[in-house]
Length: 210
Image (tube, rainbow, N blue to C red; front, side):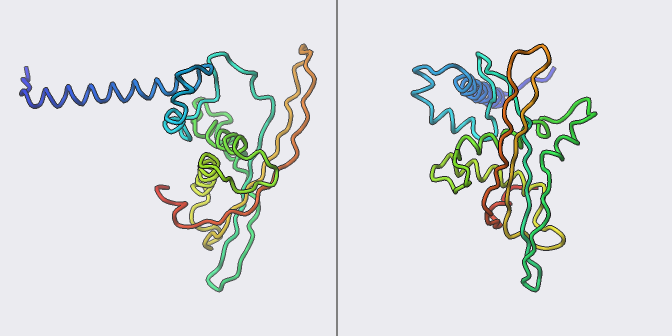
């Protein structure tokens, strides 16, 4: 039977306590994020947001809201520059269509394919209510822009058609889901397509991307 030295046991115990503490802090932040507003969640709102957004945002509450009643699609296209300096605008790429294709007929679809892009667009819309897609003035709005841009650039890479990417643009539309025949709800209205302005792309946008 292996015997651990006192220093080794001390390190193991401290590491275990640190991991348990970090896990408890993380779970506590998620609980406050999904719980109804209360004195604690309001007092520590900024700290909770720093832990949760954007990677761990939760789209549910302890008292569940109505489910999403629209099919939302997000597309992106890029502008590229050739070695001669010629600028080309590429065709739209259906980012949502790519995710749908990856999920369909997959018995164990990835959480990334199911939710990452959808939640990123929802995060963007919640911080950019204006239809013109103006650049956000708040830190949370800028974080939403960066998150959405980096998700798309991870798919495009640094080049398109062998040319360096200069700018990226997004558009989205939402089609209402028809209620089932037994429901008394009225069908919702389709949301007009929303096309954002061009966003410049630089090396910093690729930091940490594979």
